[in-house]
Amino acid sequence: MLTLNLTPIFKARGIEKPYTFLVKAGLTPHSTNHILGNKTRVYRLDHIELLCDALNCEPNDLLSWTPEKGKQYPDNYPLKNLQQNENNENILETLTKLTYKELQQKTKDFNTNDK
Image (cartoon, rainbow, N blue to C red):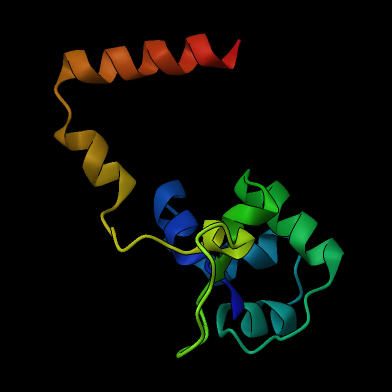
């Protein structure tokens, strides 16, 4: 089953009030409630685009796939790429655990790869 998995992105971006953030980004309160409550089964492409724009991500970052119980999938099944890992550690927590030199190196690597 495919679902939207926004919580890790909100945590990574330091968004403490997702409802307010999404309404300010342009979603209606009604749509925001449905999206945050995982009550929506059909997503409008303009909503996906708005989410990607507001959260600076791509659609695959928003989606999570959970395999159907009892069903076997081949190792190369394309949706397996959308399985969420079990690591729930906050990215900001991870960054604070790095030494200053490690953080400088990561920043340097990031800036080098960005060019």
